[in-house]
Length: 167
Image (cartoon, rainbow, N blue to C red; front, side, top):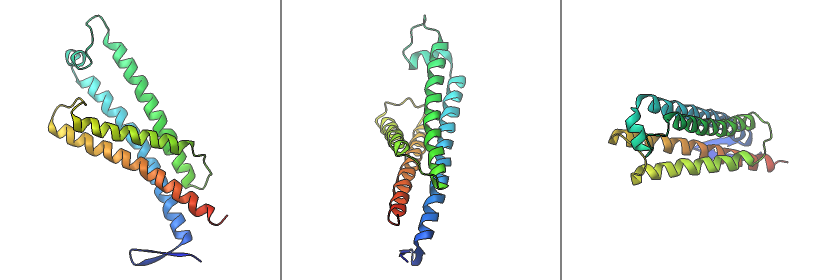
């Protein structure tokens, strides 16, 4: 029986597998939650921001109806939520023992890259922010969302390695 040391305690292979599976399920929930948060945050922003500010922010001509902005934003939010739900549900499924293809890990890596880009954009000042507090909160949330996606990737790969070592 293979044993690993963790913080001064011995862990069996089965305990490591259980920990990775549990972490994968929790991280999958986190990915879905960040998708829902992103949708809620953007919808609140659009509802609470005045039309003139939105037009200026997006450099919109007066002739273009704001409904077009709402529809396009809604479409992008639905795609984002769909991608995050796919990754999160796949992670949860794999955490429960079902074998999943590597496609969801590739999608997770692309989503993590997008989150990392968002953090860089906030730091460079290219993202639209209202205050320094908004900037800090955005950086923390986007960084945590990226870390959650990276945790899904790490746990899935490690779980596959441990399962493969016995098969």
